[in-house]
Length: 194
Image 1 (cartoon, helix red, strand yellow):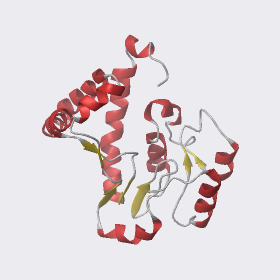
Image 2 (cartoon, one colour; image 1 turned 90 degrees about the horizontal axis):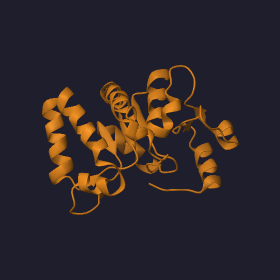
Image 3 (spheres, rainbow, N blue to C red; image 1 turned 180 degrees about the vertical axis):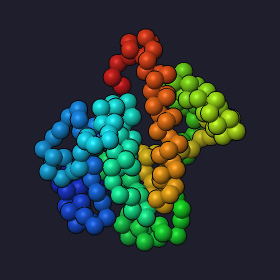
């Protein structure tokens, strides 16, 4: 992954236009001139762009899934972080590629999450998955609260089209239900923007 400054990003995207398709997440809420000139908007057609403050880059993923002809492999980078182009040809040997996991500490992920966020939100997420896919939900809970100490950041991936479609059919109903469960509470309405 690399993280270029804006001018280097523009040059990089222009020289790799056969591979990268820039999308501006949350475009229904805010536009800047660079994005108007260089990136496709996630607003329009079937979109959830207005949910960007809650779902972040997932609004772009949703828009692409719903509105574009999916190629054989679908990949997403994050902001100015990219998979190295020189290894892209290697990706076809795998079903899914994710960003390099971060081994954060010996503290389980749920405890780390609690340092920066409301643990009740994660508890609701776990509860949802135990209700809807019990076997997986129980393993998810065990990983988060006891064994899991690493994660793959930034929703960066490359995966086969069929797996991308399957993942989207799984994750978006979950996100919409969790948005309703968490964001519909009085407690949530009293939170700051972060």
